[in-house]
Length: 55
Image (cartoon, rainbow, N blue to C red; front, side, top):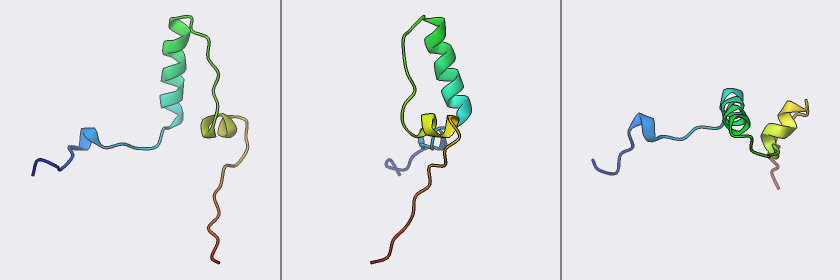
């Protein structure tokens, strides 16, 4: 089928090596940047958990 995705086209959550690779590329280009969001929270040792509530 045409609308089926190839394995290489699927997405996944980012992992630490993704962030490290991105930062290395940005550093090589002498770019100014900051890391924000879930990855930044995890790097600083905070748990970023979700909780399911049933009402």
